[in-house]
Image 1: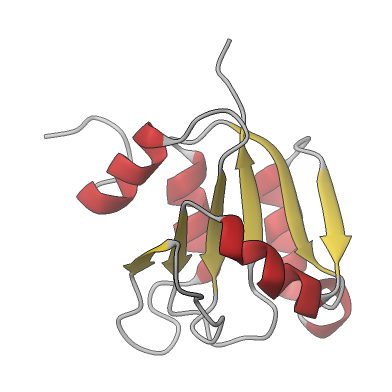
Image 2 (image 1 turned 90 degrees about the vertical axis):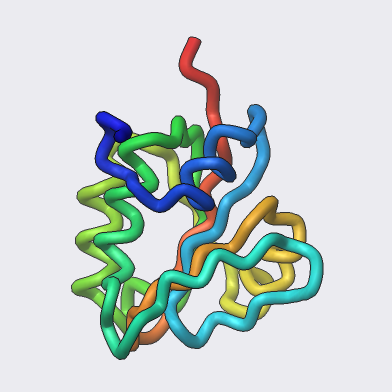
Length: 131
């Protein structure tokens, strides 16, 4: 059995395969997932698991050099925005329109669907390196 926090085998494998600059997306239950990126669907019921729970598990294994969120997150979902900022800490974060965010997800290696039922609870994580 693994010693790290993340137990989901498929998600752990995707993170292990990421190279520097590769992109992983964590989305809410409503984020459209385009053809192309691998889909990892963790949604069980409304708000299970929550966005911040999935983010915490991913951050326990993934080296992240930067993040992108939708401009709309801060004003439309301040609680999720605050928790996202807390969890990312000093990781640089930029914003883009929600429409451009959805276009950017097309380049992701994988998109992880949470059960989050609140608006704009999505993040694009760009893989960093550990050295």
